[in-house]
Amino acid sequence: MTSKIKVDNINKVSDDSNIIKKCGTTTTIGSGASNPIVVDGSAITLGRCGGTVALASGATQTGFGRTGTVDWQTGSIKTATFTAANGEGYFANTSGSAFNMNLPAGVAGAIVSVADYAESFDSNALTIVPNGSDKIGSQNENANLTTKGQSVTLVFVDSTQGWINTMDSTSNVRGSSFIVATGGTITTSGNDKIHTFTGPGTFQITDLSPAPANNALAYMVVAGGGAGGDGGTGEAGGGAGAGGFREGRNNPITPYTASPLAAACSGLTATVASFPITVGGGGTPSASGPSGGNGLSGKGSNSIFSSITSAGGGAGISGGATAARCTCVQNGGSGGGGNGRAHPSGNTGNTPPVTPAQGFNGGNGQPSPTFSGGGGGGATAVGGNSTGPGAGPGGAGATTSINGTPTARAGGGGGGNQNGPAPEGGSGGSGGGGCGGKQEPNSNVAATINTGGGGGGNSNGNAGTCVGCGGAGGSGIVIIRYKFQ
Image (cartoon, rainbow, N blue to C red):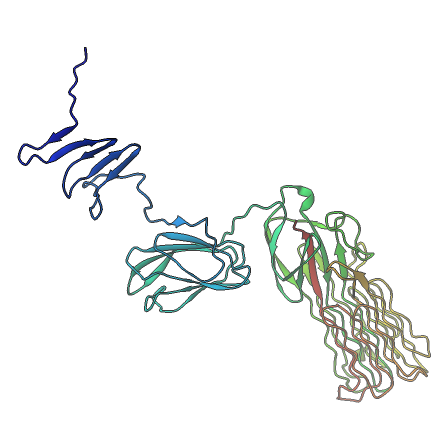
């Protein structure tokens, strides 16, 4: 038989105070102010109100709350200005508007964290405001969080440095069923995102879809158009060629009405990488010089995205009787038109050659008696020939809805008209091509920016002035489209 000792209470001999006391379901160990352990059902309480629980030297603890971390407040997503508390972390949703997080009074060891709940810090910043004269990183100034997906942890160290950021994450780890990317001006159309670059930038892909079919990129890359040929002292210049136009897509992943240059399955496959974007500038026209002098207009510059390069448009051939007076070799994405004098033949488009063609040839000019220029080539048509009564029109550009709206780009510039009975120069091709200059007085014949249109050729020029300058070429554009939902 097992021996037992049955007692409810054990008391000290010296003062009869309780060492162990049993009262109902509660057992108390210790007495007076020390009263360190209370066992009540399933709860064990260490210490008492106003008391201290300490670990012995060299001892360790587990399960007693945070040690240099915060308790994340998942049940209270912040959408307006609030005051943080020591030991807490917050999810801030600034998608509706920017607001502040006010820090608590700084006490050494205090810790606060905050994270971007809706990936909206880049559009609406979260401002962190120190308490009173407290500092953030040695400065008594506000701190702004402006990076998408950012999270930070601040620890108050001392009055010299104040709150110091000990953790800063901008990795923005998010699950996704589709491509995730940044760069350019971002818009949406249906289930697709559209990134538009009108100048240099970087298209960065950070996540891919687990479904390979959804990793298709549609693109449109348009180079800068050439500048129109300037007018000589008695003849007109040719219209400039449009910048090369290249487009690809993968139906039905990115369904939109594309140009005739985009085959059904001609898009690129996305990879996690950063892609530098080059947007070609338009060609610069040359001031008209004396007959037989230097009057060379400039070609457009290339535009580049990934493996796709579109060639700058060729400049229109300037008027003049000698080779030194003209830009005779102006092949490019589309070719420049011929002049109305010694070099009436238009130049070649789709140079270097790609399939489908990125542009077409320039039209021919008409020497005596009209001295009118040919039109520059466009993305889908050759530049028009001068017919004698009038200058040649620019070749038509290409129309696509890759940006969500049917838009024409890469039209050729119209040729300049010198002595023909028609009072105007050749019309610009649809897609930003500049009109050709008419008989004096001359007109402004620049192409439209960010279309890759060719500048119009101009008519009679005066030596040493820009009265007979051709029109400037239109700058290019790069657009990338993909499925995001």
